[in-house]
Structures are given as structure tokens and as C-alpha cells.
Amino acid sequence: MRYQRRSNEVVSGLILIVFLLMLTGCGGGTPSATAPAKGKAAPAEKKALVAPKPAEKPEVAKKEVPEFTYNPAGKPDPFKPFIQLAATKTGAKGVPLTPLQRYETSQLKLVAIIAAREGNVALVEDSAGKGYFLKKGTAIGKNDGKVTQILKDRVVIQEFEQDISGQTKQNEVLLYLHRPEEEGTEP
Image 1 (cartoon, rainbow, N blue to C red):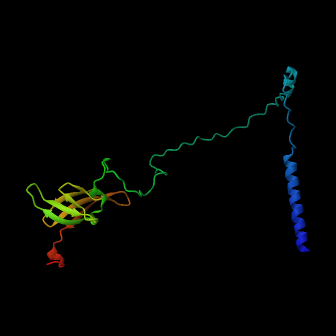
Image 2: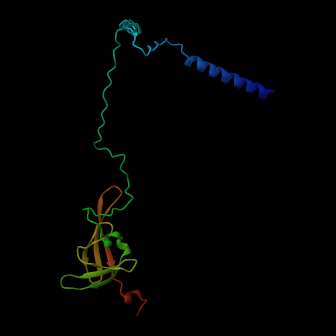
Image 3: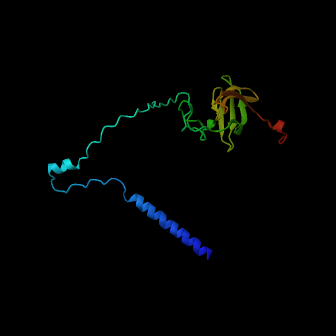
């Protein structure tokens, strides 16, 4: 019983809302002028269709709204990512990276150092066992590293890293030559 009474109230409420919507949408405003027939209308009819000018109303003082301008100077670009996720495949000067620049210096193993009159030469291996020769000034590592010294037992590499705040810091990395006597695994 209660369910039927409540459903009747809901239905009558919906009918009332639909009726009010139809009433407000069906006019109530000023009648619009009808469009002239397709044929040529007489000049008298054209004048009759033009609405008479209403009496001039005194103009209300308009508020002056200042024009807004945006100055992006000193503001970050909202479309530029905060963190660069992909490593660049070219160096800072647009030169393609060498195979040694695609590795971290910690991924390389110093295998041998060759003493020469022109300067020492070092041999490093990657994880796959492929060897590379290093001379003083050779670019190495992902952090723009350069070989600064090749000593008889180690290689000194200067790297430049950027921290979170964007400051560049110089870092010295050493690759040591491991001899079989020191490791104790081979006689």
C-alpha cells in the first residue's frame, strides 16, 4: 500500500515537472516576426518587418576592466618534464656516443696497463668480455668522463654529475688493476 502511494507521488511529481518544462519552453516571450514568402516582397512589407527603435536609454557607466597580460619570464615551462627519463644518444656537442660512453664506469673492468714512451695505455673489458683501449683524454662513462691519468696500477677518470638541484659536481673515479697474486684464486 505504501509502495503504491509513494510510486503515485513520484509519477505525479514527474508529470508536473514535464508540464512546467513544456510551459517554459513553449513561448511566453514576445512573438517573432514571420519570414517573408519566397517571392519578392513589396517594399512596404519590408518596412513593416523592421522593428521600431526603442526610446534611447541613458547609458549605464561601464566598469573599466584592466587588460590581463601574462609574462612568462622567470617561470618554469609547464610542458617541460621535471626529470629527463631517457638518456641522450648523442653527446653534448651533437656527436654520437662511443661504445665506452654507453657504459657506466662501474661496469668496466681494468684488465691491463701497457707502459709506452708516448704514455701508458690501458685495456678495459665490458660485461660481455669485449675489450677497449684507453689513452689519456679518452671519453668514457655516461657522466661525461675523461681519462686524466693512467698509472701503473690504476686509471683515474674525472666525471661530471648533475645533482637534483641542477648543479654540476666533479667526481673522481678510480679503476684498479687486479693482479692474480692479489686475488688469491690463481698461483
